[in-house]
Amino acid sequence: MSITHLTDSEIALRLAHAIRAWRQAPEGAGMTQADLARKSGVGTTPLKRFEKTGAITLRNLIAIMRALGVVDRLEDLVPAPDSPGPLAMLEAERARKPRRRAPRRRAGSANLTGAEPNG
Image 1 (cartoon, one colour):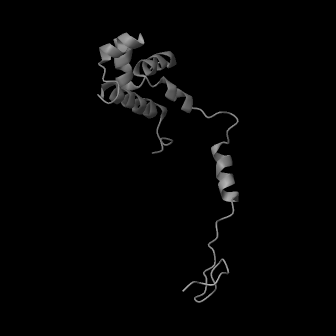
Image 2 (cartoon, one colour; image 1 turned 180 degrees about the vertical axis):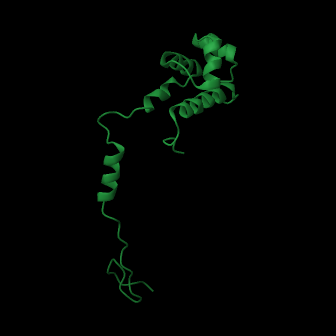
Image 3 (cartoon, one colour; image 1 turned 90 degrees about the vertical axis):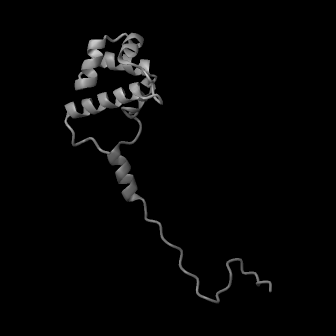
């Protein structure tokens, strides 16, 4: 799902809700706000504000993600500078020649190996 049409505040709130869901889920971190605040070093007030409004400092977000065990996902936020950008990938896709179907064989034509059929 694309988020390009959302405002910055809406994206921040969506991120906050996703992190809260991960924090609460037994399959995720399974933590309370107090547990996360203690483990991350972020106070409960900033944590509650983040989960409610999406407002947070970058350092607190990193600390929360580290405490939840998902800090390694931050590497995927920005592509490496030597990797092709989305426009270059699109142009390469357009420049690629379309695949062509092999012509159909006519009924009764010889097989591809040229050998006589056994029979």
